[in-house]
Length: 315
Length: 315
Image (cartoon, rainbow over all chains, first blue to last red; front, side, top):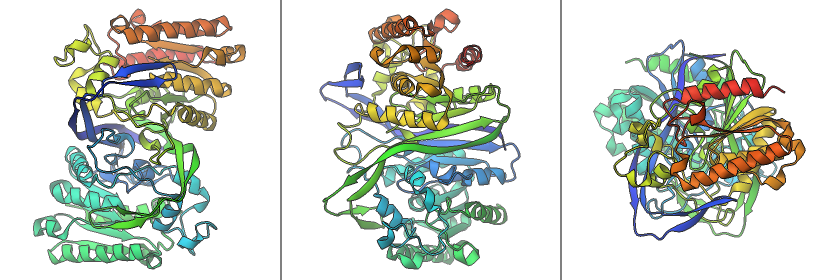
């Protein structure tokens, strides 16, 4: 049962672009209706969609903001592929107000379809690439589906998970960081939880909007803000929790990410910050995949994070 | 306050497409990380995202399914641009379980970024075109912002509304109808509420999945299923309510849509069906725009529709 004092959504941010001097084109809206479209004019692009859920009994002062990773949307925090309550539900039940973002270009934020505004084309992840990057099993075991030993990701619901995949651009980091920043400004003081690509984007937006950051949790981050962008004030503002799952040693890519994560934490702490790099198997979560908010023990990981927030993000 | 026995989401439908014999490409995932991407492999496309909310006290047997129109997503049913509870909230509060769809290519369903799978390019609506199509005011008054007399759309929050706009394809009707059909099969018996382009797509999906349709409400539909696809069994299965807002006489496009709506209802009724074409100003809702789920009197229109469902969709 979920008792909500409120829920809803809004969009923030974006900018106007203008198209000029293009010829009209005939556009079919349905099989039976078309019209002559004038493509010239103003368009609003690069906005961010935020959906929020406020529990009736809040147990924590500031909201959590959930930022998905690459090739995914805010849906990744909802019902898991095997049909259990997701982290959105877990955190709500723990008494947090939760704000879920769809980043610029993703989900209900929409993308920019105006030519020559964004560089390059959107790319889509193959199912095999997802298998490799998300650390479900050895690359050579994609076809057989043989998982890493002890994997907690519910592979038998793989297709339900694959349906969450959406395309992404690789040239939109600037707009995404701006968009996240607009959302943070609107939401105000909060604890930000970022996954994968969100670690880089959310981390950068947090550095640029550090005033509202009460804590930052980077889950399986694939990148980091530039160390040179961090000063003592930023480092000391709020605690950072950096979480990595299991099977890192199986993946050169994730070994590099782990090295970068360690360097980032070390830099933060050298400036007087409080950044902790936690390997989840070391705290009882063996078998955690990259998509650990969907793993069979996802609710327990959420519980562990909730406890960390209650204890660490207090000022 | 919202007391929910459950809420969450799932994706349904989709199909696998395969890419072969393409060269690798270097993909930058963040400013600091790239990898050599093999674009060959399998992709899952054309799935549909469904988010559901189940009230603790249900007052009606079957769920409502909300299908957005063109250039928009399921977000159009949530909080209105001026920050009031949207139809999602109104129907939940009236005791309906509510399922909100993001159609194929839109929102959290994602689009297909694989070349040569969908015809043509996505298009985006100019802000002026939206002004015209959504019947906020005369086309020549876009710049001045002078609305139609008595307009109920909250124009002072226009930018918040424009942020909801997303691109669309014009070649994906088939995939969209299939996707809606998959969602209807999964949800089971329901009352379907479609807006604008959704009238055509949802109507077609309803005709193809008539077994689960307990009622169909086409709000400002811009197109219709082919009359030749309707037989007596389909026509008699469930009542159809066709709603049109105000200012139709100001727009040749919407005059045509009204004519088509009247022809559709006449055809349904000639086959023994129960289809009603209602002009909202005739039942007390003067000033209703095309985006009437966001108009200032949106909650009263939702109440009127709820009453119709309770009275008419009973078998």
